[in-house]
Length: 328
Ligand SMILES: [Cu+2]
Image 1 (tube, rainbow, N blue to C red):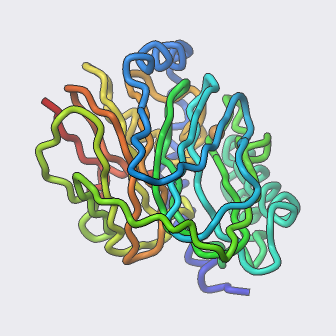
Image 2 (cartoon, rainbow, N blue to C red; image 1 turned 60 degrees about the vertical axis):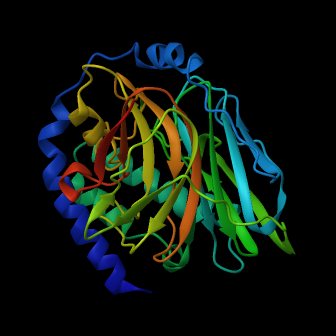
């Protein structure tokens, strides 16, 4: 049992719980969010550009992932079609040898859900005791990217390099009652086989760097149209919410409250990463976390306006992991 890692996680969680407790009382009236998002998205469907690679399609119609059970290793492009009316993402988690979806359902899912329910009830100490029940092998799960958050009726596309093994595709956005999407169907096991896809590493139009030390570094003039973005993970660490830093691309509507977006990126907060998504933002994908030194890619079709690159960690702004830019 990796007690050292677990204890440091529990400490970080304690800090986060202290930080979020005053927030739990401020409920906002934003039931119309998803409708607004849908309306915006028609003008802005992220088109997938084919650069000579066959994309693997992953589809969500309601609360599920539909895709192949087996895919090649090497460079793979995932085209995630979110045909539902809620915001989702897809992260690729490589499980340790001999573990898979059945183990996650037995030993991981229930612990997270019970812990979350306790957090919602304000029982923070009991929540921490619950999270300490995660199995030892949970620490050995490795993240291999995946697409960032994507608004309803939209498509996200990311390209990552996979090694053979058993992976889970997961979305852990929460339903309005705090239930994780994963435990309600958004968990799928796939096998990455030895055979290589033969795809080459893509060439990016723009490069984003992210590190715990410097946050998100991106200082480029972005033109409108479809672009490939590279995301370089200079370093990596487990943040206070038990996940590593990643990069999501968001279109920022005029007059929208960026602090609402900043607060929403923390799943440990009772209303964080929970439907409804904050008003006035459209999620356009991005790249889920991967190990230090690795690079992954995502594509997006941009029109003039304001955009944000943001990480799914507690208070990304305070960590330099919220960067806005303008497309002219
Ligand atoms: Cu989801």
